[in-house]
Length: 431
Image 1 (cartoon, rainbow, N blue to C red):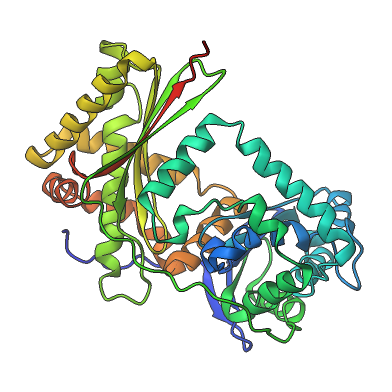
Image 2 (spheres, rainbow, N blue to C red):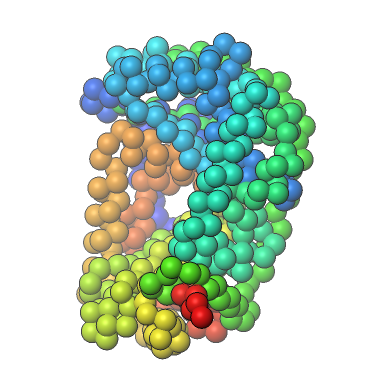
């Protein structure tokens, strides 16, 4: 691996408040302010029989508090021309808003009130559960969601990364408002929370505002906790086929387990370099018309309608995937070609021209994704959950340090044509 890099100056201010909450602030000369709140309360925090609780709670937080009626937060933001939304992943729950800076002081208390003092009223619990159940039912009609969920379950047979973030109907119907209050008060505590403020607001004003609004946390409650079990390496080829009606194109999804990020590990730099190297390999294989698999399988041989690759960085285990949309009769041939091209990555270093192209694309993507206050706030919050916020700005530097031999070693370590999981989705032939 490349040598450990000297860290670049971190352009934001990193502050730990007296109650343990992490605040990240960066002044930008724009008339808007972005606030992102990241909570270590994603799906991996759920015990198995509480699957879906984190995502369901995201819905319920907007049902108000004892002092705030349902919908009052959204109305307050919309009236001032702002936007707000939320998302739940395996590693985190994420709440964000963008508002004109002049309105930040009067709107941030609404957001803090929702997150810290959610009422989770019995009267709203059943109604909102039906909304979440409808999301689950709709996902079953999405062949790409079904394929990816099947793939996750094959890759992660012990770890909660293999569960659906939405949960299951059975698990959600067994849960109660009291249990959700337990989950909320156990996890939505200052030591699990990062608040990011980016915009035209001075550092001292941001500290005062966040300190005042994110102050009165509820008394924690005990809650069942999931103790994650490390997922063993894939040592064979795991395969599953799904047959679906009303499907015109087959799907082929292939996956390999990659590195996670342990912020306490002495090997954090090595883990980050490996993750970013796998980013490069994903671009090499299937991003852009001149990438290896796109050029060969789509442009030259016309064996696929589309093909893509990506590496998803997660706290406890990353996931490298290749996905293709193609005619069913080409499935076996395309999988064999992909395996052969994966084997070549271990055998032969990539060319300097290919490496330069991959680095250029990824560095450009990074630059384009850090242009606005909202993008910066999201970047800092994401890395505060995965590792440390300071590493957020080292991505281009780490990419440029990668050499062809480094990528060859990474391919040999993580990508094998003999050890992977595959999900195939075929059209259901009706007689």
